[in-house]
Amino acid sequence: MNFTLSHSLAVIAGPKTLIETEMPIDRKFLKSLDLVPSDPRPKYARLSEAIEQAIERGEWTPGEKLPTESALAEVTPFSLGTVQRAYRQLVDSGTVERRQGAGSFVATRSPIKTDDWHLPLTTTAGEVLSPSRVKVLFRDRFEGGAEWSVPLGLTADDEIVEVDWRLNFDAEFSVLSRLFVSAATYGNQLYRPLRDLEHMSIPQLLQLGDGLPQYGIESSVQLISIPQEIAEKLGLGENSAGLYVQVTARDPDESVVFHLEHFIPYTEHKLRYTR
Image (cartoon, rainbow, N blue to C red; front, side, top):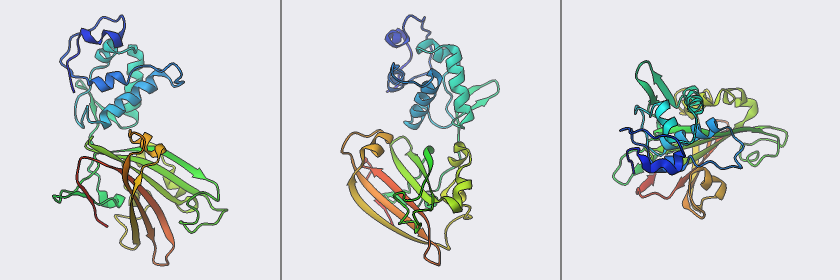
């Protein structure tokens, strides 16, 4: 629900003098600005995250103009300097773009092909669903003996790189995807700056060209209760139901190239996953 800023926001803005503006700001976004005393992160980082989450929820869409820094400072508990630093962080991450003389806008990005993610989702009417935004949540390198050593055909002495993404489908639902690959084979490529990974498909990440025609793909689908750790990253409640999809790519010698997981929550859409 959008509404125009007014004096009803005094409980959030505190003693600040409010301004009247026609720039709508969602109530959920403003609620997310409530400061948690135990949160050790700087205020600008918390504000930056709140804006990014609002964009992912569709409160601001690609190409849409964001509130000015001064307007946002007027109606939130943050100083102008904090708002400016949060916006700079969003610009650096590629989430927001500045246009000379026009202001700050949600960045527009090239369409993402689900084929490159091995996530063939369609509606029952046959409409192909593609994510509108991709966000890297996690990346790490694990010592030998990690959970996916055996599925990847690795020994206990080999290392694995894991990268987690959240794929947002037009603010209607999100999918969490996790990629596991051999650190020895692909580690350097996957340790590029995180914002670079958000603009790359899996074939591009693994330097495999435009697709995987030379690799065999195996997949399986299960209906599960989504693990709490995953549910929290998707903004879901406890015991949320969804699909668990596993995808394994093998080269002609049957060696595993990568292993991929998708956690797809229940949505109001009637979805079809086609293997």
